[in-house]
Amino acid sequence: MAQSRQLTAIIEREGDAYVALCPELDIASQGSSIELARANLKEALELFLETADPAEIKTRLHDDVFVTRVEVSVG
Image (cartoon, rainbow, N blue to C red):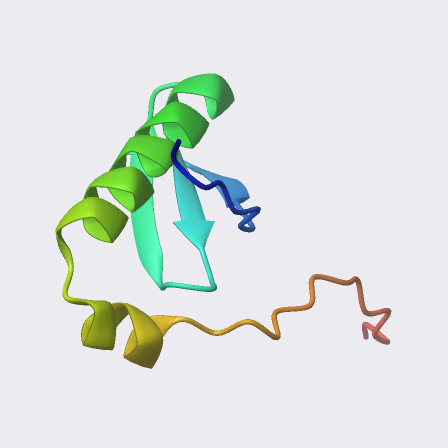
């Protein structure tokens, strides 16, 4: 049975498309909707994890990723 792991997906709109980024592995994908961008990122991550050398995965994987908001002064 395959293992699973929770990874972060940051999705932002760029023009008419959406870009999805996984900061833990620095892998990105895109799609015409949020759902498609997320699905394409999942596919890219699974393909990478299936085919990459374990040493490359270890080198690229950043376990300490924190997503938060920061308030800044403007003007």
